[in-house]
Image 1 (spheres, rainbow, N blue to C red):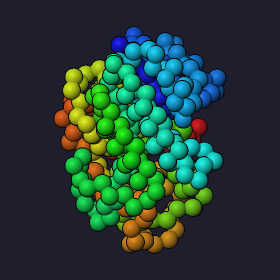
Image 2: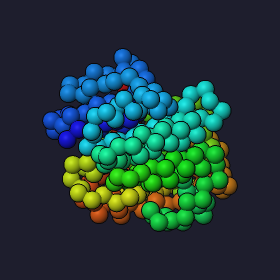
Image 3: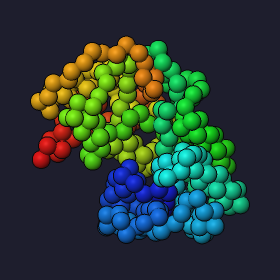
Length: 280
């Protein structure tokens, strides 16, 4: 099985390590391969995903799987459009001229949802984003969904884990606002693990999956628990106003029905090793 990873950041690197460990052939694509860690069995190549010509070159090979993990374009006013929509359009154009159609997994975000009243949502819930980023994410999803081959879109909740220490730094600096809003999370190892699970264990994956752990939780509860683990006190009252990311509770029945078992079922299990690593 040959897998192409378009966009080689943290999640793709974790996917690559797992696949290469199963003796699968893995190629990762990014602009600066020399800045990435060297992994045994993983081939890294340089390419600009905003260049249709360079994508054509990549797809001279007949890939079995393509995993797409994009990021906002740096230094661009319309960073989400340039980082997500434009590469997907180029990919659509390239694949429209190919006989062989790979299985595609596209990593998106629950930012395509705009629910604000603590509603339970699943893969069939209304996607009516109000933010520019959410609209760009949904537009990119629609392009992927229209591709001729098999596609699966993974709408991930807030991804956290090793190296993702922005929140911990904000907490230690007292730079946080406690909110009474429902939030959802997923550990980076479970994102990578679920991608590999779909590639290697599921014959007919669903078109869309919500990727989050078992426990939606109020934002202020997460912050207070983290502060307790860090040995700090949080000042200020809990703001009852819903924040810019809304307030929703994400189900993960599709993920569970696929047979995947979460490594970290809730934020407490997942953050414990992250805090230990961060405090070293």
